[in-house]
Length: 397
Ligand SMILES: [Zn+2]
Image (cartoon, rainbow, N blue to C red; front, side):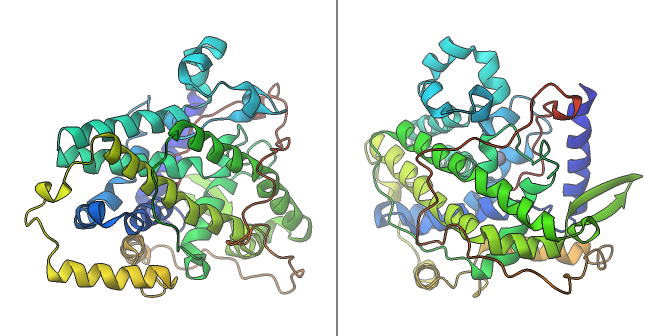
């Protein structure tokens, strides 16, 4: 059991030291910010006024993982634990039914994200009923977090970090390194929020789609491994007598060509479920007038102008280029603080690289076959190397 805590500790050190790829909250913050842009005007003024706080609190669930042992399972669901063959047909959608079939302990061990999203949405609905601004902001931010997690393929498998297929580090590569580095190439425009009649069904559909991307997530990395030597593939850093390995910028560049379209597709799809669940909670609570919670009740001239600038940048897909993402401001600070000790940890890109095929899921062409999730690559659970160490503290989403 010691094993469970060691990686957590290391990850905490990495987080605290702020090395590249380890602030890791970029995705959550970006998704939360974009979700605000998708809201109808009846909600947007309130959410926009609280946007910096919402964005900041959207990472709170990850931040409290180290202190709260009950937190970790809320961020994922390892569908392939239940079956590698049509797991979505085997796990009951309703929590009570799933408990009946598998026990609460098993659900806890393999993740509860769909039901945590439902619970958080109910808490938000209640917060609207109570006109409790603090709670509205808190639960909106947390709802954004858990929903965003459901959009990450690696949050749906026991091989969540590629640790069972000798691809350890894939998790933070996919969800942190790539979006942080290539955000300027990603599109973030999206649809207006809409009321969701059956949120649980929408959440499960999202998870099934995430699961459908797993094959590509692993296979595309394997493809690069075949042509890139291990010494080019990884960078190593030594801290506190420990060596940590992560994927190099050279590998990230190749992986981006392979799966960047998929990462972008998930990053730009997530805000719509977030904003739609915010809207649904607000409607379910009886559509309270949010202006009554604002002082001043109307958006100021400055707020209006700022919001309009951001909305037009969002629609033109220039938020990142215009440095309008709040997540970029955080990243900048971390980089500055870390410059002193980092500097030379990156490998040069390899001299020759294979021409890469097009990304599997361009942002405008939704996803290879999420409807029929294929078998996911995992090894048997009998060897010691496959022991579950449920920590995902490097988790960016
Ligand atoms: Zn998370």
